[in-house]
Image (tube, rainbow, N blue to C red):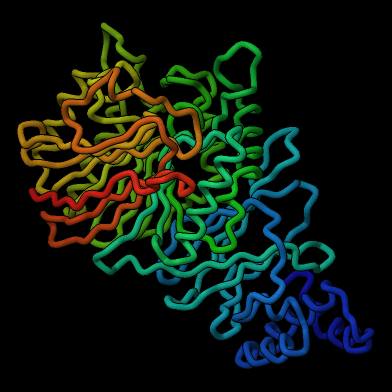
Amino acid sequence: MGYISLVSILLLLISACSTAPSYKEETLKALGQIEVNQSQSLTELTRLCGLGNRAACALSNSDYEMPSAEFAVVQGATTETQTQVSLLAKNTEKLQFFLVNRGNGELAKLSRSEVKTWPKSPWQVHRLVFSDLVVGHEYALAIIDHESRLRDLRLLKAFDPKKNTSEIFVASCMDDNFKKVQSEMWTQVEEDLNAGKFEVAFLIGDNVYADKGVNIIPGPATADQVWRRYAETLNRLKFYKFRKLVPSFFTWDDHDYGWNNGDSSYAYRNEAQKIFKSFWPVSEMPGFYKAGPGVSSFVGFAGQNFFFLDDRSFRSANNQSSGSQEHFGEEQLDWLFKEIKRSPRPTWLISGDQFFGAYHPFESFEGNHPKAFSEFKKKIKRLKVPVIFVSGDRHLTEVMKIDKKEVGYQTYELTSSGMHAKVYPGSFQRDPNPRQLVGKDGTFNYMYISSKTLNSKSIDFKVKSWGPKTGENPLIFEKELRVKK
């Protein structure tokens, strides 16, 4: 137990202290009660809280004087019994981590802990995996420094992947230079999270503008610059300071890759992948969450498949006229279709840029690599399960109706972009989309997707696109849809 292994001695010392103990002393006493007597720990924490012990109140089922959210923290893939967390801190910090069940006061098991660093960077990422969680209980993640002070505390829950419904938050394009807007947008998302309006977050690309503000002449970022920009962004965005954590899943697009409109020829491609996998909690969890080629990944819950695709690591140059055309690459697509066949149920394909985007001159699978896209649609058509598409990048929000002639049945592509980044009024007037069911440009936005699995070949879902709640009409659009193979 590290520093807390001296608890029995420290408790004796604390009992002799003044009637106004420091927060450090209160923390030691609260954690000491947990270690000394697990079966009575909640009772003891409640008793200490009643005596004014702030740490005991924070660790038990009370919000009394909880410490400020000091570190950037994100929760990753989570099951009924296990969760993973990434935490950004200065490399001079000596930290310990405890996950306390606020329902019974017991400690979850810290089953894995590792630290990711980068040469000459003052920032490091703590990667933690906790096990022995119980569904329905809230947990307090206590972050303790080398002086045994409770420096930060976050709340999280286990996640039940077996039910047939899901409530998902989706966002992309998060420029950390939009300071006022990001605070406002994330504040309203946090209010929704606290109100239970979603249970999972998908951050689907341009989560970090790693290539922005690093060079006088715009161009690809170096690996050192990508690491620095990830650290800066996590420290700036309010999402990573939420008191309540939420299981979050990630993929990237060009900016967090490190090169605007970048492809597989990026000199720091391998380093960028390593940085992505260092900052985000993306460790595999057998039977639930697995990694694919590049930074792609798969998670299955609510009777559905979710594939987060890597649209950069294997990408050919946009619009190249000779040689093979690749958007996701042969290796990634082979992995994707094998996994879908292994788990035949309604499937969501999630990419940083649009799939069906030939209507505009910007990046998309259909527009940049039409031959590969045509083959991709043929493979989608041969699947026994329905597929829905989710994308970002466009700095607008819309729902496209994909006709039966495209993939063999009617489906949809949902685009959510940008959460807080430059937006472009008049985009649809300049580039009208013949497939568009509903959409809006020129406004910051994010999306909620509520879904219900009917069977392996049918799914109902509701899409809500939200803008700033300071505006007159924060609900941009709402659609109830069904996809059936």
